[in-house]
Image 1 (tube, one colour):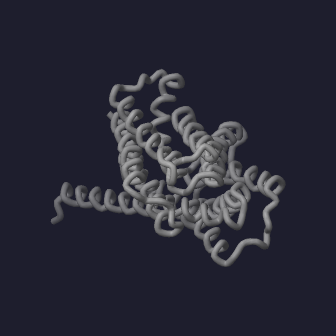
Image 2 (image 1 turned 45 degrees about the horizontal axis):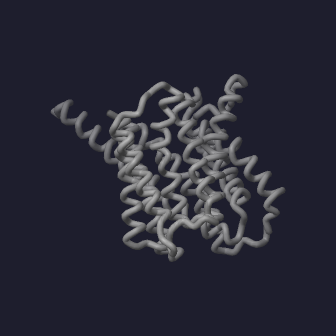
Image 3 (image 1 turned 90 degrees about the horizontal axis):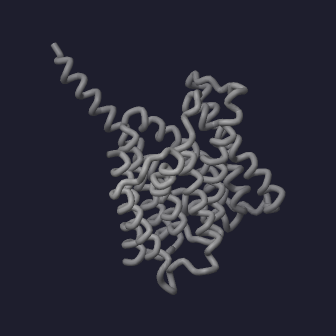
Length: 302
């Protein structure tokens, strides 16, 4: 006869293993999206490309939600909160980070955007009244030191003419951080919530891009089309499914720290596929920045 304690421990171990595998898929898929988006900007403008991909992903995730029996209807009293969530989590996070790559390379953008947990810790003071600890401040200093190193250097550093890209990247991180600490989870099933946020957040991107960016609808090559399909199916489709699957099996703190793999994958993939700089300075800057973010996440969890 099986020991119930042994069976329970085995089930928990299997669930954790599946959760970690889902996190790995999520982080790698999101990380690979950075060089993919940088490549796509050669053929289509940023807002139109990201908006089109997001709308297709919203339809896909909505279909998955319906097939899994999740309620898709959005109650009237949630429209305002859903619109705000879509602005902070999708329009600003995805739109601004994509715009930043008009000026920054993929690796620079990924590192700047994924400083988000540091800004969330600082914003929690004026918004929630949670004073940052000394450990959080130390993490911030380490993170900013890494960013400063990223700015340095005549050849591979961030130049003055890339200032707009820096502002868009940090704007994406700050607004998403504000949404993280100020928005409460909406009373909707997870996939349905993501589908609505993608729809409401990406529709303005698509329309603004169509009118203001004037994309060449026939300018997409076969490779560009493959990148669009990847962006829709993997970072915005599969990765959101695996992200929520991981959150059901792992503590949020573990999931948060594991996402630090995303900018690492982005930097390495951009160096391999796009030939972006990856020397001692870039590796040290990445290590310091991510160590600062990890330090801040650990302090917040404590």
